[in-house]
Image (cartoon, rainbow, N blue to C red; front, side):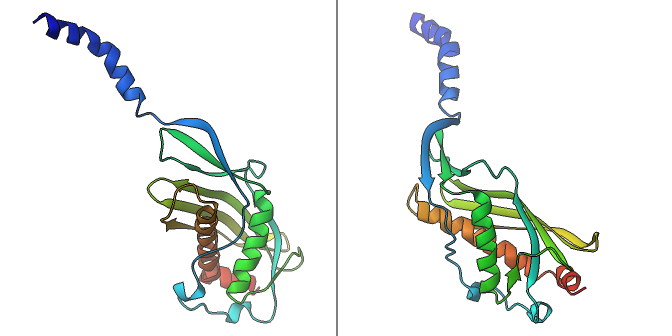
Length: 200
């Protein structure tokens, strides 16, 4: 009886410690990766794209911006109690601009950086990889088609990608994020209203 009373009196001290062990906190450990565009999916993973709206002239991409572009963190590993941040060595905008151009070319669509005629503006609002039991990347961008100070079309395109592999792999962070970007570009190109707008 005495032992039971002692254990009961210790419960208020034990319980907070038990709950605290399950809380996730931001850790000081980081993985720095050279962010590169290296998708693991191919054009054969997508349905055939109607290229007629894109023939004859390249897309005029006037502007590509990235929210929080000076923040070098692109993801985190949440396998342990303490999160581990994933950082990039280059500016996120630099990677996005080059990667979107490469993604367009892989679908047979050319682009130029011009602000005349019918133009396209993109704002990347999310590019993030969460590593838990799998790698999961999310890529989201707001896109508008403009001409003569008028917006012909505006919308949001997004895609996600999952990969499985060894923990804390820069290659897998790159592949997963690249796959999500490529999927987002495909969704943009296959959007009927976007196709109509760029021909005006």
